[in-house]
Image (cartoon, rainbow, N blue to C red; front, side, top):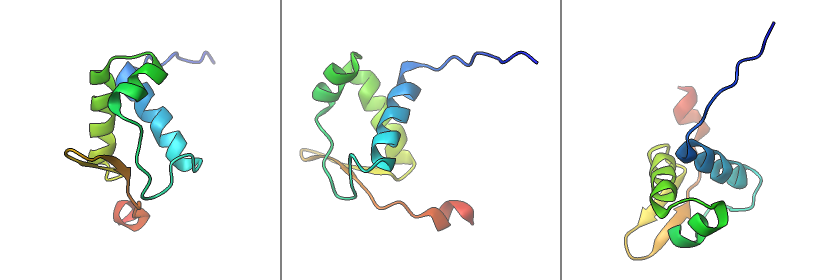
Length: 83
């Protein structure tokens, strides 16, 4: 059986990288993420791509962005998604 190649856009790729960094403990609960500009430079993408990935993780309640302060890792509640 042949395997299908799955195409992913840049936003999803950046989102997965950030999610993996959170899972691995590179960013712990309460840690502040680098700026959007720094992350864009690190990933070789535009700032908009990073911003959209962060917004996606905000919607999943994994990150919290505070205007004028930055983006922080939130405690994830698995029970919320199980129920």
